[in-house]
Image 1 (tube, rainbow, N blue to C red):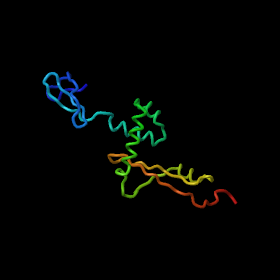
Image 2: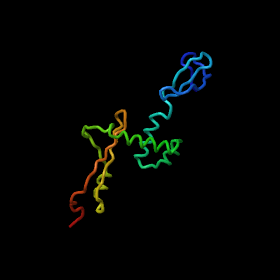
Image 3: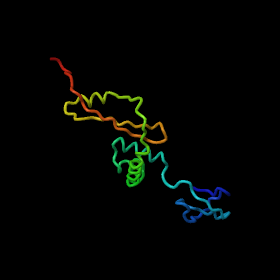
Image 4: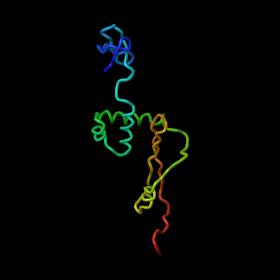
Length: 143
């Protein structure tokens, strides 16, 4: 529950919007104040993004996080629009690959393959797709 920052009373009423933020008025001391952030926490939005990058759909993410699938769609769309400003101009220093790379690239029907690289160390999620084209395969069996 929200409290008045001046007298700590919980008896509040809505008092309009100021600079795109909801405004409240305390019934006890008549103090007016705005709320810093309206909406879901950033951690929840990043969790939805991670689940989307793992292959879950909007509706399944919404069911799992107990939020609207439309909200998930809007968050993913917003991250996509901000992707250019999040993209780092620095090259990739360390890449770790496991046996999946060998498995995918050794398929005879593979036209191309890629690895999704996600950098979560900074304050934002940065995703890169490293693509490869299979070269001429050498014989894996006996001749």
